[in-house]
Length: 191
Image (cartoon, rainbow, N blue to C red):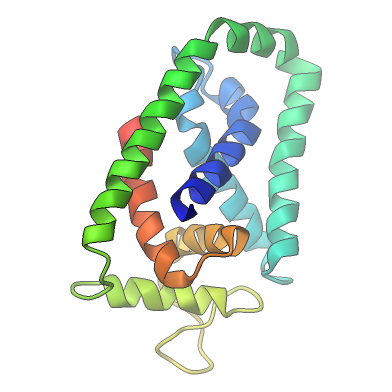
């Protein structure tokens, strides 16, 4: 159920950002459909980070998503509406195949992570601590889990994206860590 919740969240984000990808990646044969999920995560992550300097919570994440949705709506309304609709109708079968492949890759990676779920060894404890530090931060920059009162002085954008998905789907940080690994594999496979 957690895996399907993450898949559905990323699927909705990808749909919201597809019109942006359609314009930005118009020279690709699929007009950027396979990259729309990655683009959505980057855009929602970036806007959540910017708005997070005021407050990092569900409202700023929702605002970030609505901003991506609004940008897509403006593009559809003013620039690419008919071309986008025609392309979508013509390639619906392709989109279904891509989504089935993405879900299969995500489930396979998730099944593997079920067997190797420990957050121990190499940099996993640090990764997990950073996710928890971001989740417990009321605003940006996020709290450093190793230095009380300090902020993370490290590249944390990927951890921020995982934390956003964790907040949206309401899973525990440990589940989010393992789902993020499976999601990374599935996004790489699809792209």
